[in-house]
Each structure stands twice: as C-alpha cells, then as structure tokens.
Image (cartoon, rainbow, N blue to C red):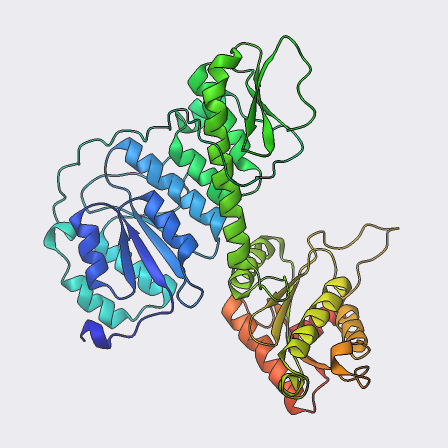
Length: 468
C-alpha cells in the first residue's frame, strides 16, 4: 500500500537521532518526524497542535556515553511535560548500547522491533508499517555503523549582562539547591540542557538548577539566590541585584565571592529568569480557555492521562462528567454573542465554586465542558468531615445553574439555563482516557434525548456511588 493511501493514527511520533537511518525511518513511516536532538524534540512537544499531538517519542540511544545520558534525560523531561506520551528507547542492531543510568524502560534492539512496538502500543496499521519496515535500509537492521565520534558536552553560557524589558515575578523566598557532590554523583556536570529542562518542567525548578550550576562553576557552596525584598543585611556577604530595567528579581549573594565577580552572573541569571517566565506564560496560554479561564482540551487530555496514571496503582476511582448547556444556540441568536459568552462564563464560575478541591474543569468545545472528579486525599479519617460525594456535587450544580441571574438575558433570565450531563467512572466504565470520555459523552447525549436538564450516570459511576 502506498504511503499516500496508508491509514495513520491521530498524532505524530518523533524519532530522535541525528543520523541518516533515523531520517530514513521518518520518511518511510506514516506520521513520523525525525528530530536531530533533545532540544528540537522538546520544542516540537510544546508546539504540537491539539489536533495532531505528539503521541510517542522513540529515542535512538546508540553512541557514546554522553549522548546516551543526554537522550535518556530527554525521556524524563518529556514525562514531566506530558505523561501521556509514550517514550521508547531503541538502538541499531549490534551496537551494544545500553539505557542511561536510572532508566527503567526496556531497550528495543533494532528498527524492526521498534516498528512492532509502534503497532502494539499505538494501534498503527500493522500491514502498512510491515511493508515500510521491509524496505528499511539494510544497515538499520543488520551490521551497525561504527560508533560516531564522541560529542562534546553541551557548554553553559558565559555570563551575560543583558537587561530585561518586562518584569518577571520571582518567588518570595530563596531557592534551595542540591550540593555539587550530589549533582556530580547523580548526573555529572550541569549545563545548558539542565537549565532548559528546568524551564520546560516549570514550577520553581529553574532557580535551584541555576544556583547549583553556578555553585559548581564558581566552586562556592554558599552562593544563594535571595528574594527581591528585603535587601540582604549581612555585611559579611556580597550581594548583587538580579533585575530588569524596572524591577528587582532577586539577589545573588555569597560570603566567598566578591560582588565584582558576581555582577556578570546576575545578568546571566536575569536572562534565564526571563526565559522561564516567558515560557510559563506561553504554557499557560496554550493550556487555558481564554473566555472562561479554565483548562482547554489539550489541558484536559494531559490532566486526565496523569490522573489515571496516578489512580491505577492506588486503585482510586476517577469520574468524568461531560455536560453542555441546553439550547445554547438560542442565547446567541436571541440575545447576541456577548450574552452567550456571559452564560458560559457564569456557568463555569458557578461550577468552580461547587466542585471539590482536587477536581478540575475544562472547556473542550463551544458549550461543552468536562469535569474530572478525583479527590487526591481519599477517604477522610474518623472524626473528620467526610468528603462530599460526586453525586451531591453534580446535583447541587444542576439546581443552582437554573437560578443563575444573567442581566444580559433580560428579566426572564432566572430559571432559563439548564445543563445535560453524563458521568462515567474509571475503572468500571473505561480503562483508558479515550474510552472513558467517549462513554461519558454518550451518556450526556442520552440526557439530551430524554428531555434535557438531566444527569445520567453510567453503570460504573452508579456502582461506585452505591459503594460509598
């Protein structure tokens, strides 16, 4: 079957490697893209559109130990960014490559076996991939090329004195950092890749990683990144501002390094902090529905995959509620799109005030929403207030939404907004994100067919509620 007529799965696979064999595999396999190295792969994961997400990354681990280590750390970064992405490690037959230290995944020994894994894990069409695999370059499944020349370790930036144009918030506390000895034993010398991984991982990781790198580079274990206020008052310690043109971001402080030596590194730190803040804002925008402020479909898919992965070993149920607003089109037609937007915003605001801590709301379509009900703490201890059940939450939301007062709809607004919903519960109603969502969606359609303003519980959701 020709590539143009081949059936392909939703999403793409990244083949990470910088040789001609990886590039040839990407040309022959449907929905595969080659990436020369970790930086390009991470960038593609972040930039992938929701309609065609990255579903797997196959990392070619052949080569010298530094390359194996860097590519192994790529797998850790991808898992932190999106745990739903399958990470596969493979090597050309005969290279004798091993997995990086600390990696527990199975090493796939040749390209043909990699093809089989793509079929088994992702549901790719076996016949078409088999045909493509049969045409692989002989050296990819036979004798291996000689090991490539060792790649140099990625250098770290020299100190930079560039100033910033926009303020960047910084946590109102110092950043703890591991010791130089611990870092060397666990991962070897730190470099730019570690800083990029910290930026991609988000949270509060950049400060600690950057300080650990500077401690290693400057040979000082007392170097710290202090919060912007108050100014350091210890006269025995040098302190240099980390700032942009308008705002102080923090202080680089040390008892063993003079201020003159810290000054260029303060500019270096400010540049990385700006990159960190910019990436955090882009990530927020990529995962947020602009109108309502809740997560979008991409955020839903990532959160559900992680929630189910956490629930499996703990045998914890997870319930999905899919709902939409009944007759939503009439609000736009009769009152205008601003009124329709108000209905969406007010409904979401009410829902967010109704759900429990640990539950999440997402807008995945025009007036279609999903709630992930997953209490992270489980049953309450004896003598404490029991957690409210999912059934109580959804019925209270259903009642309260009919009492919404929306000025944009005119005097008849009270009692005009209703919702139809369906609830499905892992593991009874579905084991995987896709099947669980499909089940809840069908139950929501059933609520509409049966008259609207209804909530339909799936067999698993009902069984779970009856067990409580």
